[in-house]
Image 1: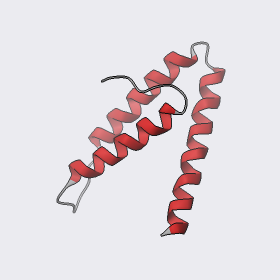
Image 2: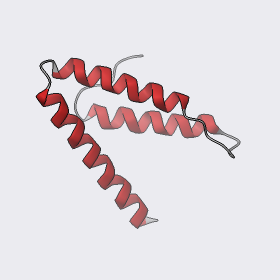
Image 3: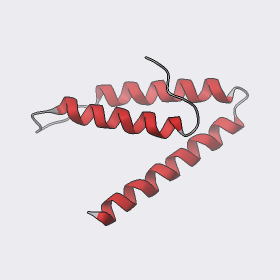
Image 4: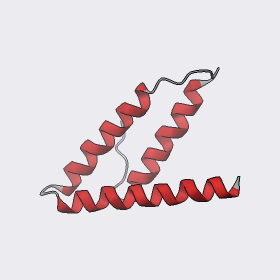
Length: 79
């Protein structure tokens, strides 16, 4: 389990770095981050999760992870 957690943390760091790099190349970095975060949140809300009884919990954890990643770059919005 520790190996899986380590790999997930590495992926989160990689994704955060890639997003920050794209934002820095954008003429409006804050707008880019806000739009990108909103798109990712919409994708997470719409994911079809098969074979689980409590998909709301999975979505909640995924949303929190998205917010955590983006909070490293800017505070999450209140929506």
